[in-house]
Length: 445
Image (cartoon, rainbow, N blue to C red; front, top):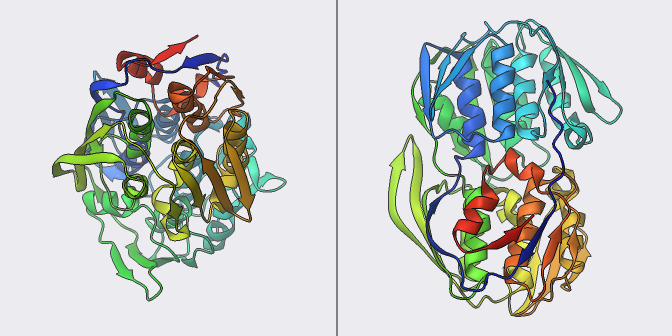
């Protein structure tokens, strides 16, 4: 059943004493989606610990149940009894993916190589986002896609149980498209090859190996990667421990850097090097940011992040860093608004096709609160100053990351900042407002 969220406007005032304490952030969303999907395709029983229980991931769980997997939750532990590759069953109803573009695009790959018919839809935001980027390559494996004009949901998929393996070079770096093609290849006979111009987050490759799949990765001359696997494959159930989401950690972390008097420790954060572009950038800006207790859990590097209030300076972020921090640009732009000097964030074309046009919405967020910006092609220029005014009303466009970025701005601004709707924060960071208030924030309904 489709859930319609009631709008939750909030007003955020500057935190008077800073943010302090120790905290955890929810499990990594990318890893959570993939753990449910691959466990459902595996033979045997998988237990998942630390799964993100946000709306996006719960939609993936519902979809995999509808496709025949048995998924149960006992406290914080999720148990999945998988069907096996090629053994998913046709759903009895439309698969509602809510607000999750990741779930819809990755699941498209799985559906395309199973002998079944299915239909996917989502909320108003997801139905406005393009799916052509996965439809075009996947349709070459013998499956058929039918969507609204522009490749938008609702979308029907006629899967091909004898799918042709694909060899595809991504025109633009995208972990979601790469993953969709690889997942389609699990039930195709022969060698599936994906080449990406720039290395993108590799959680799919890591998790496929975790479930017993032989995945070959080679580095291309230009710095991209070539990923290969041979299907059909058999996945063997293995337990998964999900680390804290580095994208979610970005919001309390940046807030601690901006709010005077802050000293915050965020524990158990995933530190996959293809996800840590924001941390690299903040260090270049002069952030007092350190990593403690580094370790490896479930094949992924993990550590604790300590952030203290810092005087930041402007930065020039190269376009090749975008894949490692694509979801963090709105909150990075907020940090740049509080920095000394100008910052230039390059190569942000991917932001135009997120939950909203995140580039335009980020510019609006900054401008209504007194910051100066300029967009040149796909670059965002932010002219920072140490004490931005605030006092504006942020329009979130049903985008959880814009809502949280607006909250971070308000915690350090001179005047309170109004956020038009924060309901969609629950899709990725359940309990965000309560967590921030517990650390010393002043966020009120």
